[in-house]
Amino acid sequence: MIEINNLYKNFGTKQVLRGVNLTIEPGETIVIIGRSGCGKSVLIKHIVGLLKPDKGYVKVEDKIVNELSLKELYELRKKFGFLFQSSALFDSMSVFENVSLPLVESNNGFSKSEVLEIVNEKLALVGLEGILDLKPSELSGGMKKRVGLARALVTNPSYILYDEPTTGLDPIMSDSIDQLIKDLSEKLKVTSVVVTHDMYSVKNVAKKVAMMNDGIIYFVGKPEELLNSNDKVIMDFIRRTEV
Ligand SMILES: Nc1ncnc2c1ncn2[C@@H]1O[C@H](COP(=O)(O)OP(=O)(O)O)[C@@H](O)[C@H]1O
Ligand SMILES: [Mg+2]
Image 1 (cartoon, protein in one colour):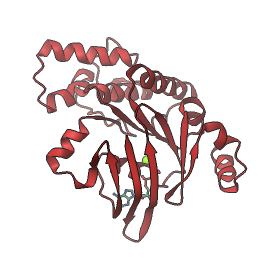
Image 2 (spheres, protein in one colour):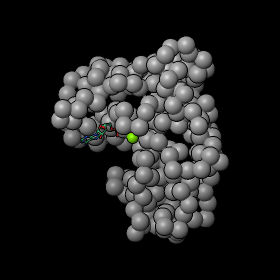
Image 3 (cartoon, rainbow, N blue to C red):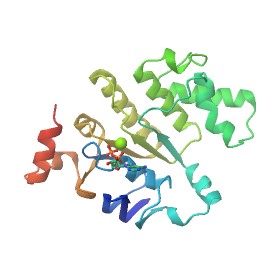
């Protein structure tokens, strides 16, 4: 379980998080939606301790993230797969090298052939095969996201954090990534947190949706409750984001 409790974060005089509260249950898939710049990336970076809160805390299982030692934090991060907004692949490295990197970095003790087997298995999970030797520059935007996702999966995480997984993709590609997120969360029984400003992803992926507004979680509920809400702030948000 991930518990976000009264989380505050400022950058200089800019108040980004102003008391975020949110509980994410084991095995669930939650979509966090909010306008561009509202603090979604800042929020999920707190979950894995990439940012420290000014006030409040994030608790993962029984651990308070900002109180962990560096060593404990690295241990905790092994439970997470993080798909960054940019895919964050290394251009000079092949697909195989990119995907196997977390395994190599964690000194896993696997043999070369075991690493190859794991990489192939994860690539198959994201619908890619036979591209081990390609470089990121030879891949489409959607393929890069999939490779980034295979890399996030390579350590068998319990939690997957997706930061804007469909940004920059065309609608068809976006739909297939949304479908993949859904399939993976069902197949792997992971806890998935999807951050997006894409209303389509809410409709396609979410069983539970949380809307960020003005530095807080303004709404948590089912997607249809959000979409049918009479609340002025929510209606205004949906009108602006609908395409
Ligand atoms: N490291 C940082 N230093 C200063 N300001 C930051 C930093 N990271 C994010 N911000 C600011 O915090 C706000 C929220 O950013 P972000 O979480 O990236 O928004 P989004 O919801 O689009 O992901 C933005 O105004 C951004 O400029
Ligand atoms: Mg962001």
